Image (tube, rainbow, N blue to C red):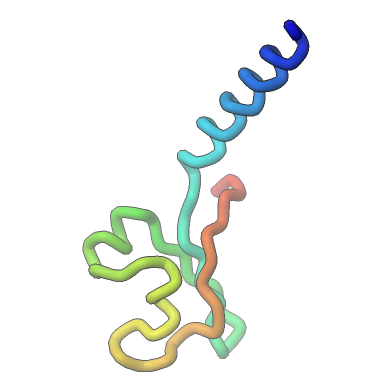
Length: 70
């Protein structure tokens, strides 16, 4: 029982710390990479998925959340 509680607490700690560095990673058709923070997306009025059609045109081939260190 103690082992399950410790494992659960460790899992919660990992989730809590990994969500802080989440950013939107967009792949361009010209093989470029563009990153947007949560604040950038809020200022633009888009979600990460919505960035594929940014400014009423298809700009990016794929946009997804990236949690790697930057």
